[in-house]
Image (cartoon, rainbow, N blue to C red; front, side, top):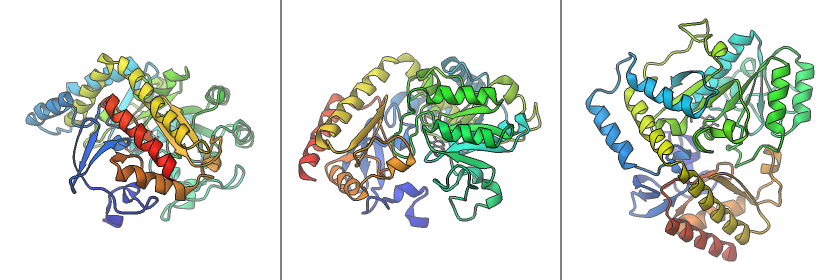
Length: 408
Ligand SMILES: *Cc1c(COP(=O)(O)O)cnc(C)c1O
């Protein structure tokens, strides 16, 4: 396997050392192959909101497995999961299940182009929407220059229709709409940016995007692969009271199994095959095992809404400890998501995130790891609370953070 891993950030390149190999996990705790135990703040990058091996999810999946894994034909379970999602996110009037967040974002853009008959899309520097060709562009080429591929093997012809702007920068978005009048099919954004470390939208920024896309008849896509069912049941759209035209989901809705979804306005989603001319398909899409895990997860979230508040309070306790330990750093938090940047800040876009001291981050990461706290092994990834973290877990984590501040 390249780098010994099946997804790059797992290789610990930024923090040094050897990745921990996980043997098993339970609740908020990971156990590695060397017999160490960790309190987990990665949670598989978001899906494990209930903690690991949640007994109800495990039992539901075990039962479902006895009935067969996949049929390539519809099942009631897809409708059940779809109903739960529609109940939580009323902007999703019609939806299609896929197998990953990458597929969801790629397909949402295809349908936006099909619907509008336009070519260009706008994405924001530092936002991640999966690894499809047109979305892997090099950050920071400037508003008016052609976008360059952010990966070898991606053709320039794929990225030249991807326009980019800095997160939270209204002026750049206005300029793009002026220059590419009536050619912009979609604006895609992480309503809370969570792939350059955590960066919140400034007050009014999402409203601004809603207004300008509405005026220009451009499709507004919220990539809620992380924020969906994370910032409460209604995701970021509810949290910020904005109705996007399309929403992408993933991570939590699969309960830890591969799952993604794109959906939204009916007039747009009706363009998707077999109703419309936008082709998109998947052998394992909506398979009964992943949908079962999703249903068992979402049902518990509906039943225990109060736990969102608890997760947020735990995140506040941790970020308070970080601010005390590192008064010269910037700590960003939205709900139960947070990250620390070793820079004076404020951090509100990709450029400011990149002013962080990566050497200090590496020492901070290794200090915590050595004391049983597993946080994201990269400055540019974020940390996730789960509903399984106990007060003891949080207190222990804060204790280690405060100690690290004295020693580093
Ligand atoms: C993780 C992520 C994706 C990609 O999802 P995969 O399931 O890894 O393909 C897309 N968008 C956002 C915002 C993500 O965080």
